[in-house]
Image 1 (cartoon, rainbow, N blue to C red):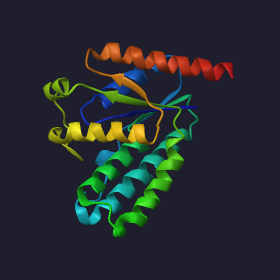
Image 2: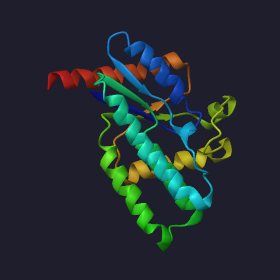
Image 3: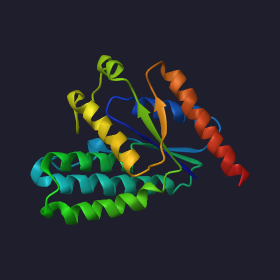
Image 4: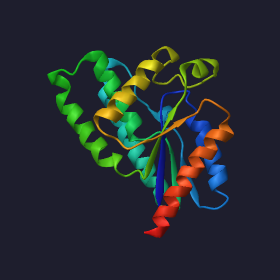
Length: 197
């Protein structure tokens, strides 16, 4: 099974892209799709419950990916990855500070994150210019808003560089068909390499 995740800030187009990818790849391959889990969180995202909330996102991301894998699809497409969950945790820490009271909680999430990050065959980091993003409508008001998107993207860039995470950067500024073509091409290359081995 090839596991592919799309990561990036809210409004960058992950959900639209992954639905189109499923249609295109589904013509030739058996596909499972894990949609964004953000709407499923029963906990409040406020300061008092944030670790509980973030732990829910981490564990649910992993559990849902595992559930989708049971049917042994050829390709599993994930709208968000454990990287996204880690970014939101780090964003929370940047607001409240990394005090001693959070160090054990940080270590729990870091252990889960480090272990699970390597389970993806490809993580596409979907990027979009802020001017393009501002012109798009979004209904994702769950864990961020447009005014914070630039800061969140900078956090992605910082963590990807610092932790030397292998992502495939894809810009989604133009027509969706153009971006889908780039994604499909990269996936086809990966499938071809896997078949050679």
